[in-house]
Amino acid sequence: MSERRAARVSIGMAGEIYTGGTRPHADDDNGSWIGAQFATTASTTATEWRGADMVIFTFQHADEVRAAPGRSRRTLPATHAHEGLVFGQFFEVAGPSMDSGALSGEILENFGAVGDSAFQSVNGTWVAVMWDRKRRQALFVRDGLGVLTLYAAPLPDRIVFRRFASAADVSG
Image (tube, rainbow, N blue to C red; front, side, top):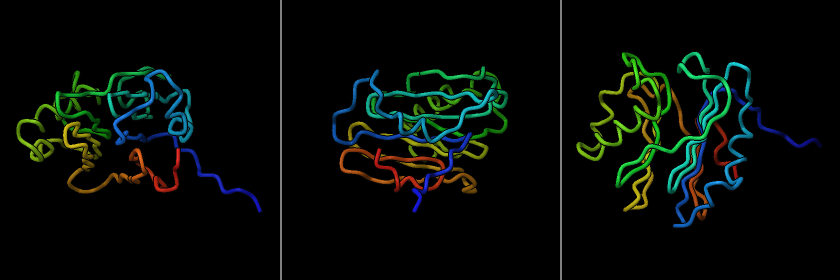
């Protein structure tokens, strides 16, 4: 009997939140299981986002997000209380806010000021993952139509999530 292997996808988001209070060193190989879930192409941009308690990988068509194909590492957007990322396609957004990092930073600031209503003005198909550092709670949000899905699975010392099915099958 052959081992069933999950198909790799070329566009998406996946990551983990370290809930145990300790996280791997920023330069270690933890999270490589996440990147292995994606197939890269000559027109794909892959970004590894690292924060205090989270690591997120995003894979997108480079021309759709006005980025160069290839791989990069960036700091995860954060405020004093939250860190997280909004991923998807955004309508009526131009300029620097086209960047997921810049848009996520704006939304995190608004969320700290006005709560859940910060997401009402985000127009498009998107999902968001946020981590409340003080309360040690995760918040998963998606666009009002629910076009994009996000799957999450709690594990003893972390929460794993991804934009495509089978997050519960991931043990890292």
